[in-house]
Image 1: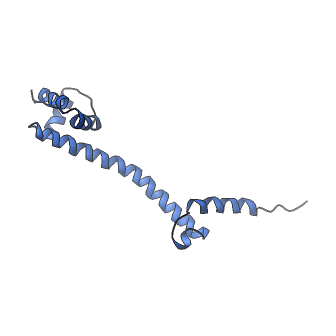
Image 2 (image 1 turned 90 degrees about the vertical axis):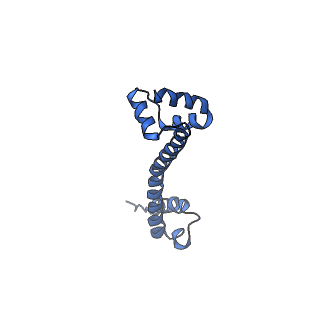
Image 3 (image 1 turned 180 degrees about the vertical axis):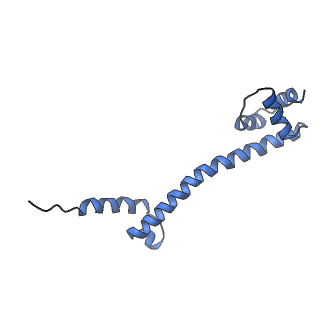
Length: 115
């Protein structure tokens, strides 16, 4: 029986990884071992970043809604509490959009919550 050489598969795997690390600095782009370490770390940061982005945007929405509430003479926590008590299910992103693009509608909502 003839011998099977597996160099092509390894070469393919290495090439695929090195293509992903294009643009990295020094050995991180052309030495497989260094490139793999760097790529795994980069993918980890990317995953963390996607989760962090959600947190950052929620905080932005809260800040916007809080500012619009103060402008209409109510505190943010009172506003959110009264929304929950009156069983109005609207998320902070939509409240933020209302506050920015439809200030009159947001003002009506605040007046409803003040009562």
